[in-house]
Image 1 (cartoon, protein in one colour):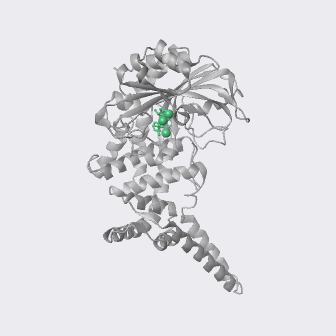
Image 2: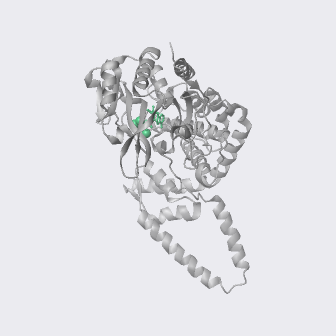
Image 3: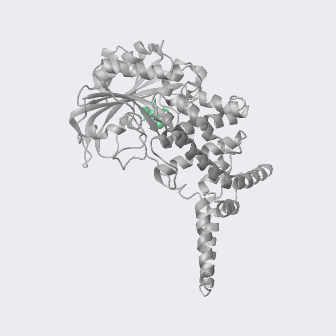
Length: 469
Ligand code: ATP
Ligand code: MG
Ligand code: MG
Ligand code: MG
């Protein structure tokens, strides 16, 4: 029986190869020739030029397992059972070749015959007006009417601005009542019970500037299935984090801390965040990214800092992430073999980033933690703008970082008060400049070099992080 992550990936690629698909290796996480995209965030992303017809594909049918990074899911990591910043997307693509019927029939064949999912645990969503998809699921696949659910544009229509777009149909797996029975545990909901595993996108229209949907002469298929989610079902784990695609990293961290993975909610989240962010960071660096203060590099920096912060919660006061890169390389080798070859480079980059971060973090965090303890003792829920400003001004904590940490304790930050402090400081700086304008210039020089030093340790850019999806 197919079970491990490597086996699932191979079974998927073999299946579509047998349906005349050209199997290609994963593209690097850093997009090539696509300035609009920070990271490859879906299986189709490296093939955009084949979809819009600007390049000829090497074959009209392609299948891949693609490494992806989605920073828009960063807050979900560790909270839901199913979201990562780094994950693998299995995808089969048709460039003007087969369309809806084959895409649906093959998807069904793969999940029920190759993965052997029980048919009555699977639910299908379609776009509300897509009668064609409805007919295929009902008549060709033979699903009962009540398991084909029509959804709105937000859930089941894929469109980004003008250009190619179309309805989609998603396959969900019912993990059972023990995975949740809240109002969020519905098809397409936030809960964990109905797990969205596979999205089949039918790119059949061109959305024009005039707001019209015109049928495309060459219709495309773009599908995406989350490997970790499928693995969680086949390995019968509670969440994606206990699958063989992530758990060995968690185990390695547990070995270092001696604190049980399931000891309490807080450490469990910390383990999950660390393992998740390590996969993103390690693979991205081996694909050519480097930490910096802007764009892609800033995402890497933010992920390393976030992982280091969670590490602190489970007792790490020294750099430790770099020691886990080797284990991470072992876990992802099936899709990212380059990481093993780049091990020393990736470890060095991660280590020096951790070191520089820890220096400033240590001081600021202690102060912030004191603030939070005091507030809690006084039963207050808002950190004052003045204290948020002290953290910013003296310890280089941008407001977002303070908010992020405070919110973990259920505490808000007085943002208006913070802005007032900022304005007052700008005013003071202006006045100081006017006063010193008569001085010899030596003070200015000194001030400039001091300012440079401060900027070097400041978390500039935290706010400017652009989300790509
Ligand atoms: P969700 O609703 O769970 O956030 P999505 O609708 O945003 O998922 P799609 O954009 O449809 O996801 O991506 C196709 C597939 O990729 C999903 O069905 C899922 O299996 C997988 N996937 C998407 N986002 C993630 C993620 N952050 N971590 C792990 N797998 C993911
Ligand atoms: Mg999503
Ligand atoms: Mg979804
Ligand atoms: Mg989806």
